[in-house]
Image 1: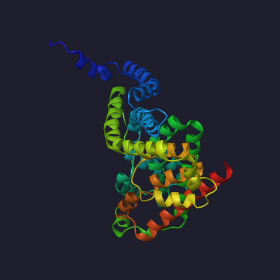
Image 2: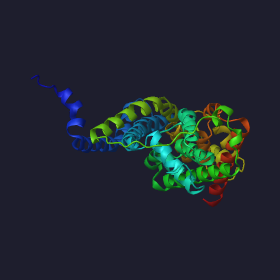
Image 3: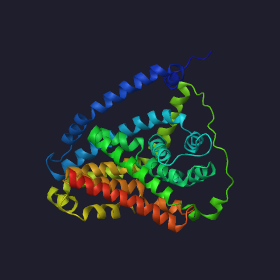
Image 4: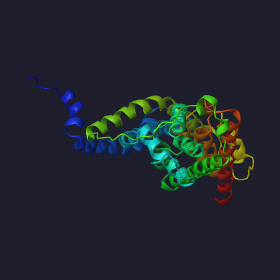
Length: 354
């Protein structure tokens, strides 16, 4: 019998001793996370730049935030990859459709928005998910509550907000995002706009939504976590680097008084301007949060920054273009208008209260 090498035994560890592997991985992750601040300062000190200069501040921001965001992202994507092995698209459709294919308005919107937090669906999956929900008999308003919540109030956004700003900002974003998703979906359901679905979507035969039983082992769920890391982190890391680079430039060179003058509480037009700027942008939570961090540090108002972040994630132009395959223009315009109004209200209220 051939003896396994050290690298082979290491690769087999998650399958042979899954609980021990999770414990060791958690300890290694924590030690790496705790070393980020001193390591970034040491790297900047080793470079021929003044730490107090614009360049020095920007470099420290970049060298600290890049591994920090990537570590946080890897952790949450891995954990949620394991959790999401319980929430397949089929199971999600079955939960939203209800046992008899009918769901109560209001309650179903809350459930749909809440499911959006723990399901790994992004704008690229909008069309197949939308079609699947319609075929399963999920009401239109409930479907939109899910489609708004899934990209905006997802586990990546909440984990990064918690890691960078603390639980209060993360909880605030969670509450606001869910409120926008629930209310917007409920309004769209009350408007009865099913006639504005594309004809081929309305004519699709209805199918029963069934959730297959899942009997995966812990090691198989760990494999699902690794698969999520490869797929999600592998796709979003360029956006993270771009976002942190922009954030570092803002942190190092943009004067605080300038940012406060155009995105502060006193600039009434800053919230609608932030939404208009955010909609055409194409990024995700991992890419936009480092920019948000730099804007807040330079004096931008919290409501304005939250409105910018929500519009980037929930109303991205690529998602609207993708949804055009299944929605007619009046329904798209209504969707964008209702969600944008909710985001504007959020921005104005928090700029007034805080």
